[in-house]
Length: 422
Ligand code: GDP
Figure (cartoon, rainbow, N blue to C red):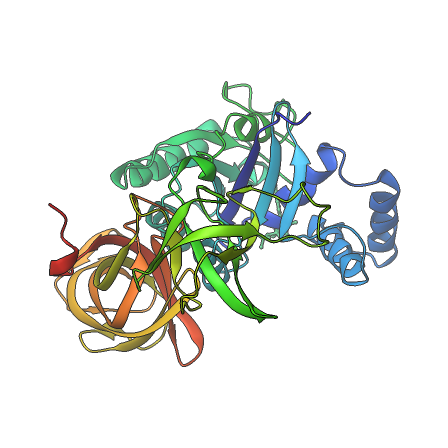
């Protein structure tokens, strides 16, 4: 039915703690994998004298996909009782961050996986911190491989206490902490018979309990310009509506240039019969529009309504996660990517440095690899931007050094004097 809410969930955890296994298991138990396929892979494993691994299954699905068949294993879809789920795998920090920040993998909620025998590791804490940093507020913790600790309650409770305390310090409440064995199938869609001491939800039930994101359509209009095409003598402005909606006849403003115009037409292809042209578009839609006047606008600008426009700003306070080997310090040059805009920038002040492994603040004025901090970014020119609290889509940015993603984060506030509002 059309009214089933869609929830996008990112799955994170230390490598080898069992992400692939849990994903394969979830897909199987919700009917997403033909039994025949499973039998076939089990037979191949047996012939090779190797144990069956759910990660083989995902790899083989990926191989099929490369040949043009169905499943994208970085974005797995299945259904719970009341929700449609998109489960996003985050292979590593860099990919995760890039995907989250570019919006390719904007997640409403997260599963944080921990190996019961290994416990909470630095990488686990970093992932927790990253979720907090990216504003993911709904987190369920999955304690996997309970078979390795004989399904013992004390081992589970110790991990539960440690991780909930860590997340609570970040202001994140774990909606559940679930003991499972992904490989053996306990606690995923069926209540684990070997954890009679546990009364909480299964993984599938926890997924079913997550709230979908606030609809992007409810926020103010933000349409980052991807390209401007000259077509005959018309100029077509194209992009994707990140939030809000757009109507023919409406007055719009481009930031940072501040130019205004009225939306004349919404173009679509194939050209609809006369009288059936589109007159409105909502968040998520690709938009190609013409304007009532000739103005010069560029890729990177953001379209909004005059009453609720993003800032045109050059100085930002940003909370960021740093991934590059070279530390980030006052003066470090970076390229800032924000929606479709790109600008040169450097670090002004370093306000704060946090080691997410231990949540300790350091007095040092440099942000090392895998650290988090708050800095002032000084851009070479104004860009259109919102504080994250105002608009999550246009309030996050990625940083590049030497053509590679080096970090990313959230815009906490705009520091320009002239941007200060009464
Ligand atoms: P990933 O790197 O997080 O994707 O981890 P994988 O899913 O590839 O699992 C890593 C290893 O842990 C594999 O050998 C799995 O068979 C094993 N594993 C996964 N889940 C369980 C479990 O519940 N119990 C045990 N004992 N091993 C598991």
